[in-house]
Length: 57
Image 1 (cartoon, rainbow, N blue to C red):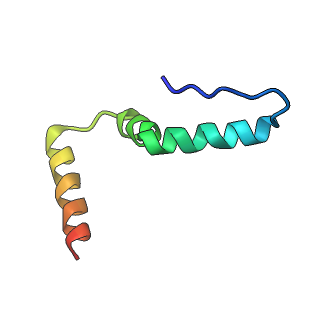
Image 2 (tube, rainbow, N blue to C red):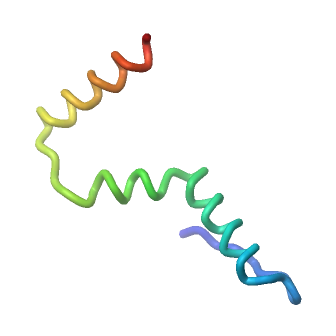
């Protein structure tokens, strides 16, 4: 669980921006999007091969 402490007098927008950056660094959004729909193991393998192939270029 990610947690951000908001300082007194700190604008809510700035705290929200820090929260979004923290979640992005921890990879929570990627994980959430990946788990949104079930993927068969063969689909996972295919996707992994596709991404590794594009990274090697």
